[in-house]
Image (cartoon, rainbow over all chains, first blue to last red; front, side, top):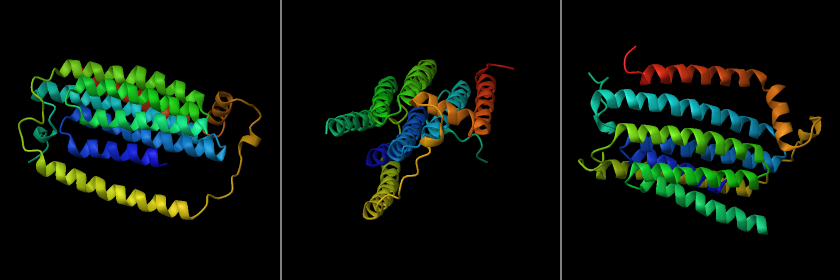
Length: 93
Length: 171
């Protein structure tokens, strides 16, 4: 549990501190991994396989999120030539 | 005892590599540290009696997602590091403050859960007519959780189409 919490916190710090959107996406992957560790730890402790089933769902959602997010990064980079999220203000008015 | 030692060693590696992922300057190095981190998390899954999830972790994360990240890192071809040309102090302080708040919250939860013991275990494994980790997970996935499974496959299809449309140069 504490390992999962620590990994989660590292992911949150990564999201907050870094300005490179690719590293922010990797921090989100770390957060999802922390959630998976938690699910599987409880699954092992309670002798209940439902946690592993949900971990599979989390992995599927993480894969979908990574694909769409990286597609967005590519489309954005083609327009603005940057991956710095401070310069991403297309929807500001 | 040996299990506890293995758990702490693997945990130390996982946390160390996670810190490296977040803190290193070079994005390519960060992706490679992410691979190592995922491999150690897979080792942790084996330690926690779920070898099927460990294999899935290595295949999907270390094999698929990280290759995707590497492609994007190579494609965007960073000429200047994004954090070099602006003052990071204000954002860093804000992020560390928020992280400290989350840490306090999680610490309070951990303290509360140590004071109260875990409830009695209701074993559902007895209801499943097959043995073995992969068989049990597959049985649950295709009986009780069939609808979420189909929704997840639908989500993957939509994500695949969306990624292709987003990354295409012109429609």
